[in-house]
Length: 121
Length: 247
Image (cartoon, rainbow over all chains, first blue to last red; front, top):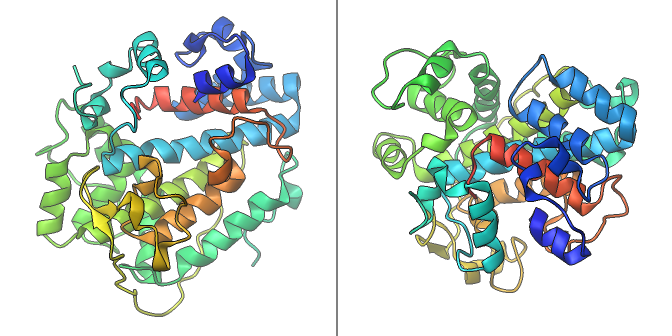
């Protein structure tokens, strides 16, 4: 969805930001590094990092951005569990965009790739 | 008591978020499709127990989560299989298998009940995670409302995706006509559709935390949000990657 959104808005981004690289996250995305690090601290349940990441995002982008980012992060803590708990396959394995993202981020190494026929290693 | 009163929150929180959470808390406390209000709240409590469950933490490190001995930290209100399912969804969801779902179904935790359980666990987890993200304590669980579950099963089911039946792409008709439009929906939307109310609850919370379903494919900025679509998808992508979610 990030790459599709970048294509739609004709923005040059670096997909490795999703993989946790702060410089990549910042490319083409305002407050990208702070947003990515906040999302990571939450998803990793890292209570040592989360307060600092929260403060850094709030300082850089403001409280409204922090709150909306918290909503999105919380929502995807749910989405990933729905997908994996129900074992749903990826919708479209044939799109060129999706294939490139899977390759760039090495997504087929994830155990849940087995839910999608023909993609698990 | 008023739940989700954010007037004293450390950050200004949009009113629609509190409204959606309050609406969900009301639904959580009421009888569902397969569980009573009391059972639904007990499942919500197990979602929270999972995060401090030492057995879950130890099992997560095991090569296989199956046949791993031990006992969950639990509240004692639900059968062991139900507790285990709720905890797995929170702490070890990537290793849930078709065989696990089928074994549960053969031993009292039917697929409809499992889907409703998943819906409850992920909704409560998501609301709790929003609080944790902002450094706020989680909300007190509601009091159960009396009544019996409906036992409703949608008529147009398909076994084409996932571990459980789902409403077929063209099956969102009749009582399910509000679930999605135009005869197609992404799999993540269909995932909970065996219990249509679980999907409806998913959509209502997603609409305030992320985007309404009809806006998800639009890739434009929602003017009610402070972050644009690229920023949203970066956050979403990083959370998904840390969770090793292929989907």
